[in-house]
Length: 545
Image (cartoon, rainbow, N blue to C red; front, top):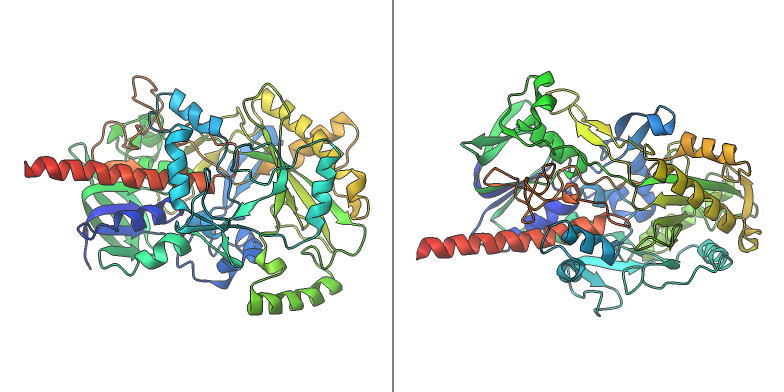
């Protein structure tokens, strides 16, 4: 087996697949892409309506847990992450949201030149193939197909409920304005999930200069004399070393990237010594600055028969699902072609904020404990997501064994401002869900979804809030260690103080974006690929002089 490549990319998720495809466009370089999971070619991945299968099982899901969360009453949170080609883009709810213009302008204001909204918009457009074609905000002809789905009429009742609170309508959350209610864009193509494995990797894998390894665990980045030279892997019981002539790129996500750096001796010595890991490079920010969108859920049983409008468990629902399977197989339509979270809203809880601070996801199913707790019958749910939480957590090691999960501590609701804002957002959401527009559909409220007493609602938020699956920030970008001692990579995404090593994924975000994180992660990889190409083109030109 070939063991020497120009670029070695660890992690074939949203960023890794994008990078592998873009870097291997140059036939004069060799690229190795390494993934701990298996192929993305499975019915549970390609069928949007079956997302829950991989949410609640461990075959294609790391299924991490957090440490006990003080802000959640001592509970452990659940952190599902994709474990297959495409990473979480192969297992997520496929919502295509970029965040707000102010998010990227804020990154730039922190000293990260080249990361303002005007700088990154071309890369969003480069990646995109929007069903409506290209315009000032959208791309056409890119690898990533973006469409909207309108499969359940119940969405219209939710949107009518938003109107009763004088929330404005919005037909493009990624356009000129983010505020309002409407339908989400999703990464689908004719009812099929369009993950980065599907969009970028399938065609790229036909290239002779791209080698993809699956079911392989990365154990450490190899560093010699201040330069990353390769990666040590374990395939079954065999140890393998893959060498990188140009760069090692870590793209393992907000949990996996800091874990791999720490296992490699890159981080704060105090986090390495307890596990018997020798310090290779002191970098105190590795694993710090963890941010995630905390989320509370309002859920209701159906009042009328919703067996044809929602996914649930009933005799009528089972009979309807037989029809849905048939429709999906023949035409790629119906509930199985839906991500089941087709509509939502962006709201201001605090009008002094630069952009909406809360996001709603309306789901045509009863969601309880991430779908792991099932209920008989049919109903619907609304996720209430705090977009710019102030709580900050960490990712550290549980042991020096690469197969062990990292210690994940999002520190949910430890900042008092997060507690108050989520409570206020829950109250606004209750008003929407109790609107007359939903009277015909809304039955019994589950748990504290309709709690009137303040203490009861606050207790319910503590008892049931958890992630909405957007962890970022643990290898954050900063201009220099002098300017930001807790940063890990510079604006070129090079690891501070080491040569030949970059981190490229959601972990580099200095602050979480105001929305779902998959599209921004793909953008980061698109931009990084161009930076890497330009860097090495310059080096080759200098060498030729």
